[in-house]
Image (cartoon, rainbow, N blue to C red; front, side, top):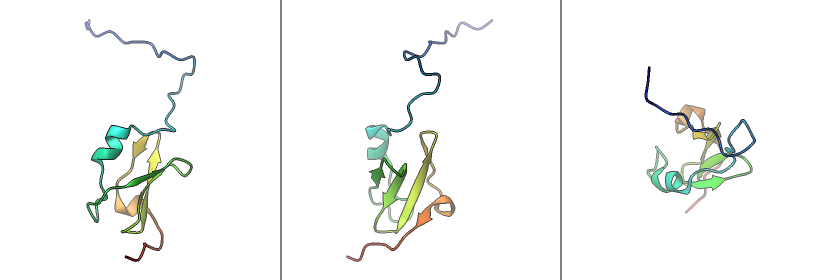
Length: 78
């Protein structure tokens, strides 16, 4: 038998709120192509790399940082 205790969720909802991304995680993540910071689009649930023209999806609160899973858009001209 294990000595691990499982703590019950503090809310009535059985599913945790994944609409927000942890700010510390956002600070640590960078675009895998440009190595530049990302911006968080809460409505679309994506991490945006404007310079690469890629939007990385967030699924169930987990950022999917794979280029082949990213949505492409016209990058910003600098």
